[in-house]
Length: 132
Ligand code: FES
Ligand code: FES
Image 1 (cartoon, protein in one colour):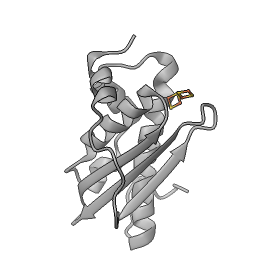
Image 2 (cartoon, rainbow, N blue to C red):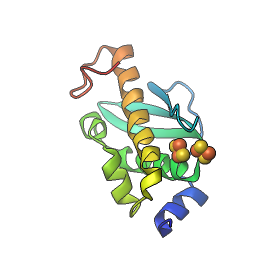
Image 3 (cartoon, protein in one colour):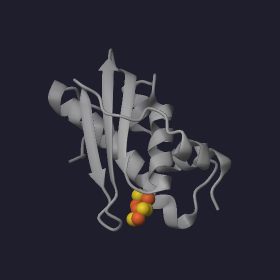
């Protein structure tokens, strides 16, 4: 049911933890399952220098957040904002259909953290103009 990559990121999640003085923090929850995901970003010169996550949720949510942090680490803000849940699923080698929403949570958590950064700094991020 789960790919090797999903199991790997579930058992050894990358970038777990919180971050002091994060430049952007985003938290999202899924009302259906009650799972919660929080992402912390350290941003310098428009580059995601560091990223951490805390996920209170299912294995797929943990694997998705772990993969999402790996996919945006070292990337530019513009690249990070384009991270889609599809890209997370692809990088994980697939997720069962009932677990697709877990990857959506990861995409939303990244966007929410970037939005927080844009609110704090006044920086306009393309793609987040309509974000609330
Ligand atoms: Fe039980 Fe997400 S609802 S693990
Ligand atoms: Fe809800 Fe995975 S079951 S995030």
